[in-house]
Length: 391
Image (cartoon, rainbow, N blue to C red; front, side, top):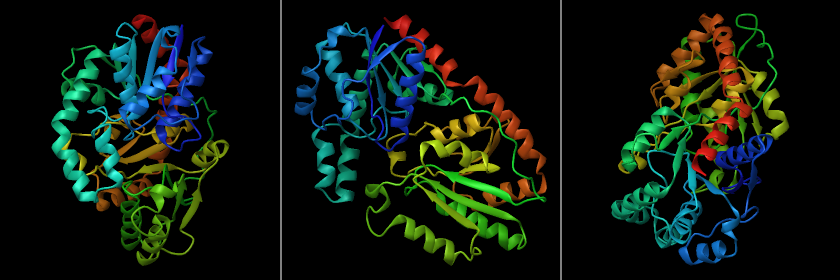
């Protein structure tokens, strides 16, 4: 079976690129040939450019084309539209990383205006175009043989919003690396509660809430033994967008919050080979994400995070906000959920771990079990069965 994969890939720095690369590697172990016709090139942002790129590929040599949709990108979406029009008999499928929508904002010429118009004017344009964008998403969704989401909540929301028949959207959970288990560091009170934020360090990730929660915890318990590591990737277009360095903003906030020197450590742009060691040297991962209020006008984002898959693979528990589909992902006894933006609730969760350190051991064991179930070799078998049924 020859499959074309249309997706961002490393060295692009985003979670979808990491996912697509891992999927490609796992399926190759299952004997599937995944070809990336647009490797090392980004798909065009307008229809004329997409048409030129797509015509340069002999699509008849493929049995199926699979795409990764999400992250605000429109190229993969327009590529699927082009294929559905020019090769209507070619089976098409897609993993939708940000259900309940496919692209969320208009593709093509309106997207190009994002760099020319004032921000609020462009946001108004997105809202005005939304009925047409939604209709366009539904047309494409109807033509795909299957759509895959990473959570059951996402599958349900996507089915309803795209008005699809039951069974067309399949849930295949985010795959995990196969990683040897390592014991937890010394538990409180024998050692400090070692907290980790890991992920892309961008605005909108709720890192400020985590800093505020730690400050509140230390007001309530001045002598609490805790440490925080802020780790992950950065990108200039996100870190320095719309003003000064976001990293400098966070450092200033840490200082103004009164957190002691040395309590917060930084590990930016962590190499791939160091991720496992980083996660397993901590007790718990925190995902303090907040939903975008602007996106709420367009729908509900019900995706997940690759960090959760790393946590399960490494056998570490998670405390997450109730943003996206995180509540589903930590419903296996592998963590806890609090209301997004509620820093007092997050501080209470951290205090609970200080008071009941056995929870860390229990949740860690449950995370290990989840990681084994979701190992990439097992996930690849689900994709292979699905692709075989579509061809």
